[in-house]
Image (cartoon, rainbow, N blue to C red; front, side, top):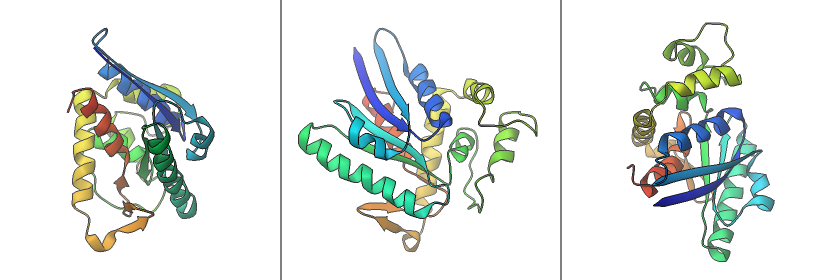
Length: 203
């Protein structure tokens, strides 16, 4: 029997609902149960809330360079502290520019840099058969998107994000502490999810 709980601070509703869906896809009761205990906020909240579980902070770049760097540094500092004190992990799980691209990668390859936060919306609507006016961040719309995402799709998104990273040039890299980051598109969200799936025997 496999039981694993993660405490996750999520920047928004999209991240929170996505994790709940992944937990649903991984559940094979009573043999396997993965739980994401989620709360809203930025990595700063982990300073007071990180627990006896492994932790993750899901956040976007959103063209906010200073905040993005600070969020990664907070996760790195807490990782060192948590490993030393409790032997637990604190993962950063970012999306650059935002998580909208992550939904695209479940269904299609996409490796084009973008210049605005709303640049992926048209493709998300197209891929998931949504109307041109629908707000992709609304709960009812997210429910519809998530119903179309299978565990196989999650694995495909991880693979596509890895391919994006492999296609980067070394000269494109910029360091945030000890973390190698790249301009959009880029993720560490897939690294966290790969660990989740590997630990429960799905990868």
